[in-house]
Image (cartoon, rainbow, N blue to C red):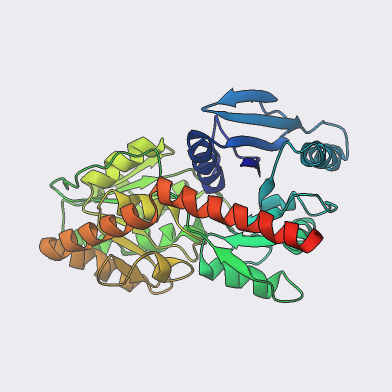
Length: 384
């Protein structure tokens, strides 16, 4: 097949989960012998090349000019580029993310346009999330409504989008994200125990609740360390999350808390394989790539019960689900893992089996390929 992905987060510097997933699928499909190209916008000041070929994938970036209205102009150029490809028979299907609503104003094409829901800003998932602008709400809503077919990374976010962004219900196919590019490490936790948090220092990710209960964990395990990975962000009340952590704990290093910042995924995987547990108490997760990667590494996982949590793992069997709005539940989950090493090892083993069977790149690529082929047949039957 000839597949066109839309993405503004495609490497070489991957900005988020959507970029990781798109690159994994694109390179996996290319390795399987399919013709894959990626098209997206190159934001003002971006330094990526406007065209390149990497790992069998051709990447086209439309620069956003600096003049007023340049974003709309670049979106129109992106639409014309993809329309030309589709009319020339150079692509069979378009796979676009819901974020940014790149297809919001598109007309009809001779190929199916799939809108893949990795997450949503327009349908707020947390009361502390910044209110989306009316412009971003319009683009996401119109993007969802423009889709020939909707696809989501979890049933939870599929329900959210169909209920809040669509005027009439529409089927939404659920295909989980793949885990790729990581080795299959052996889980060997360090002593004294290390707890790992990743996914960005953000209020919505539950890191503030984690910090509030950490002294309780330290009272029971005085040598335990907490490693915080991810980019810093701003607090609603001003300042940054990292500064709030330092102010909250007074002397973070004395409580074993280390802020490590953003690191490559490979370094995170090594940290997971040596951690006693990974804790991700988000207020909501559309999928949870960090959680899936921790499961892949066989590390016991404490994960949110909101959003995709119950889909990713069975509570008490493949990990522990917690309510981030009840911080004591986070402490109790971590203490149980630290106090019951055999139970913790069983959680990690079961999680690894699930991740390596359901999130492995090969099977997920095959599911996506079958989905694309079905979309093409459905469009052909409807126009014949």
